[in-house]
Amino acid sequence: MNTISYQELRDGYEAVMDSLERGESFMLTRNGVPVGEVRPYRERRKTTAAELVEAVRKLPPIDYEEMRAEGEAFFGDDRIDDDPWERARGRK
Image (tube, rainbow, N blue to C red):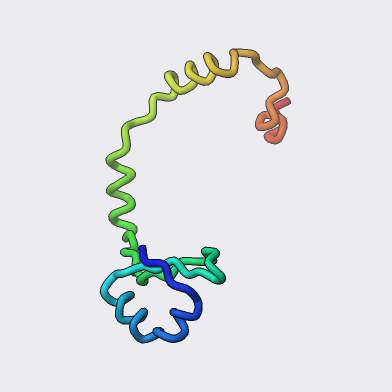
């Protein structure tokens, strides 16, 4: 990455723009202190809904019993008798 001062950017704006078009990046400084980066714009490709669905389908299946066992091993198997979900449904 090239380093340029604000003065160099101001005086050589067209050359910097040409360099950006070629893919070069710059560290912008003021009084020798870095204040920012100037880099080429890269348009990000957007993921379609179909691609997202396909990616989710490729995820491994969730083993809920294994996940529960890992949670209990990590957090302990203490149970709280007062379940807020059951209470919200009026069951407790």
